[in-house]
Length: 125
Image (cartoon, rainbow, N blue to C red; front, side, top):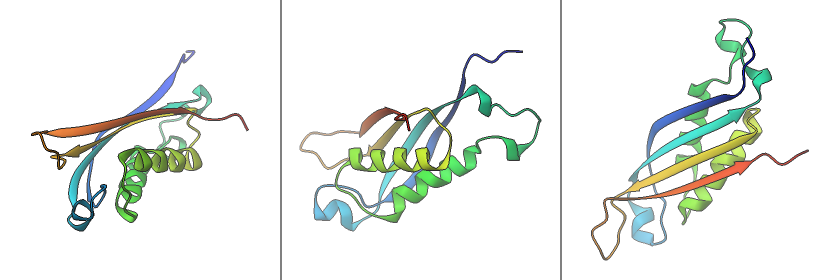
């Protein structure tokens, strides 16, 4: 069987952290949710039914939570870039798309959530 494409999606990765422009946003932990999709080379499809042959989605989720909680940043865009850079370092993805959502951001209007989405293809080495 010839595989045309290989993607891994991990949805609903939740963490609490201190990201935001204002000092008050960075003082108290807030809720964030990430959704990520990795495009992988078809050569990464496992030949056997063995976990050690795949890009482990638990490691993907753990890397996102670690990046999201290890240090504060002002912008969701900065956080999204850091996550993408880490995923490129840790797995053979050819492209990564991430959506990071912040619940109840401090705005003048009533806003339930705000999301940032970035898509990046791996640069040729």
